[in-house]
Length: 345
Image 1 (tube, one colour):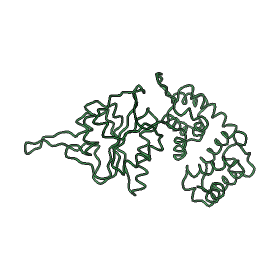
Image 2: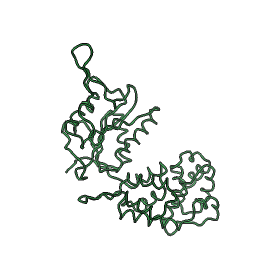
Image 3: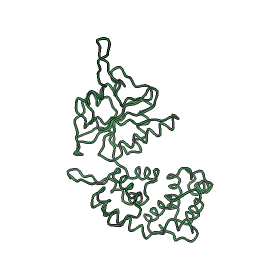
Image 4: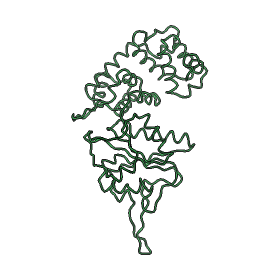
C-alpha cells in the first residue's frame, strides 16, 4: 500500500505531537507493533505538562475493544419526559483538564466503531458532551503488512487526521533508554548493533521478534533477577527477541564481562584500566555502565576517570550520567567537565 505520508522516528514524532496539540490538530501515527507509537504520546504528554505547568493525561481508548454505543455513550430513558439522554462515556475527561485521548489501533476497530469516532475526532464531542480546551483526540494504527487485524479507515475519518508513519531509529531509542535508566547491557547492545532493534520481517510469521517494546520488557525481567544464570538469561532473551537476536544479545553480555567492574572503577578512578582506545564499542559499553551507577557522591570519581579516557568515550560517559539522572547536571564536576570538553552544549 502506498501510504503517501512522511516517515519519521519516535523523537520527531514526539515533537510533531506537541505541535499538533498546540494547533488543536488531531494526528495519527502509523507503524508496526511495539515500535513506540503509544510511547510517543506519553513522552509528548510529559513535555506538554512541563510547558503548561499542570498534568497532561493520556487516555488509552482501545477502539477495537469498544462497541459503537460505548464510544458515543449509552442512551438512557429519563424518569420524566419523553426524550432519551446520552450518558457521558467512562473515558471522558473532566472539564478543564489537559489530555491526549489516544484512539489506539483505529484500523483494528469494527467499521461501526470507527464511524462512532467521527464526531469525537472532528467535533471534539459525543452527543451533548464536549471536550474542553487542551483536550485533543489522536490515533494510532498498525500497517497492512504487519499481519495484524486491519480494517480500512473510511475516507471521512482519514481526512480528520494528519498522518505520519513511524519507523524505529536506534539513536532515538538509545536516547530514550538512557533517559529512563534502562539496563546498560541492553542499551550498549543496540548502540553497537542498531539493526537488531527491530527484526520483524514481512512475510515471516514468527511468535518472537525484536522490537523496542520487547527490549523494554526483557530489561524489566533482568532488572528484578540480577543473579539469573546464563541459561535462564538466554531463554528469556530468546522468548522476547527470538532465537537469533537472543543469542547475539547474550554474546554481547558475555563480552561485557571482560570490562572492569564499574564499581571498582569508581572506587579507584586514577588507576582503573582504560577501555575503548582500540574498541570504541567496548568504551561505550563501559561508559553506559558507569553512567548507570553514577550518583552525586561518586560524580567526582566518574569525571576523574573520564578525563583519562578517549574524548568520545569521556563525553558519552559524563553526558549519559546526566541524562540518566538529571540532578547530576547540577554538580560542579559535571558543569566543569562539560565546559571543558563539550562547550557547545
